[in-house]
Length: 317
Image 1 (cartoon, helix red, strand yellow):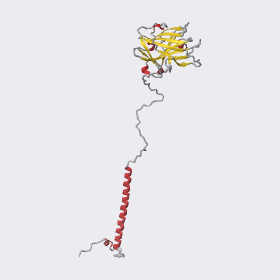
Image 2 (spheres, helix red, strand yellow):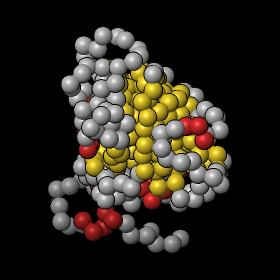
Image 3 (tube, one colour):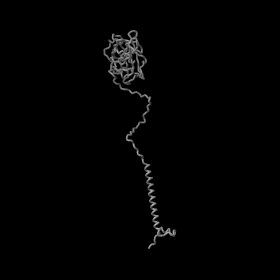
Image 4 (tube, helix red, strand yellow):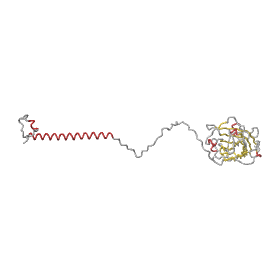
């Protein structure tokens, strides 16, 4: 029979003479159980801390969720748009020609035999270009008498635009001269010589007004005056005056007037088919001894001095 194997109890032999040998195995087993229990507790605690650390680390590393409101709209905003100061002036763009208000189409026929500028319209063929029968202005206090109309005839050659006007007016008053002749009985023509380039509701240097006065048929003779638009939209005395040839005759019902307007006074080179802006007007003053523009009649029903879009057109045939 083999010798019994030494156990743990032999290590305590002689250390505690009073300890019963019968109780030693029970205490050993109790110690082992406590150690095992303690180990389990340690393992559980260690596992819990390890799991907690792992969870904390993975939570920090996650990307946060982004919630976009369902009504939010995000647009790309260009960053290369130059800032415009409130006082900046943008360059005007050309406006294509438009049909003017009213029936303003006028034609001038080419002539190889220019008329004699003497106020006698017998050498005109009789073709009526337009009639100034629309009142577009009246002074405050005007008595309402519509006693002025004008019938126009036009022709042209390479040197001049020829004009013949028959004016019906029961009282003739003209006391003014120079740039004031529009304040008496007279006629005037407004031209937009570059209508296709800058047609718009404002004057410019290619716009002109030629005013023609028959005089008073006594000491004040016929005269012409030329105005020109400016870049700022005003209309002033044109530099250089004019070289218009003019004559007039008094009639029983008013007067006749004839003029040759050089194309150079309009800074224009004529050619067949050219169309420019045109307004044909008659000024009336019925109060003797005064210089007052009481009424203006025009071939355009909405004619306005500073708005070329309210003028008609002239086509060279």
